[in-house]
Length: 180
Image (cartoon, rainbow, N blue to C red):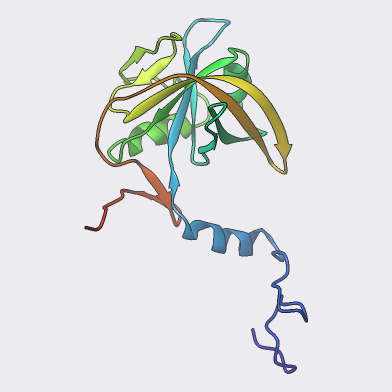
């Protein structure tokens, strides 16, 4: 919004735009970048069954040492089970795995009902159809607003397919098509 003095709403006199006014404004801007969707999996140390969650905030942190990061809502009921294992497996979901993502993102119930998987070298679920997996040990957690930033060290990894990744963009799921 243009002001009478010629500036833009939220803009300081030095031309720098101010911080977001509210969550709604942040939700309007953030969806303009695509995010890769992953599943974080492990075997529950109490009952031995698979546990997991979906995350769309996965990133490479460092090559030396090999570190990755992802964010988890601090209200997650799945994260305490995963954290207790100390080793988790990151599954890079393929573009056709939207239903798998939704199942792992749901609260409660058997998140692995009907999902096929094999064990990674660490023994954690590698989901059928995933593009790649990374076995990671949890290095650190940092509370940041309403989420936890988890930093994990990559112990082992492998690729499983060449398809496109599942992406989250503008509030929905999609695929990536490279331009020639």
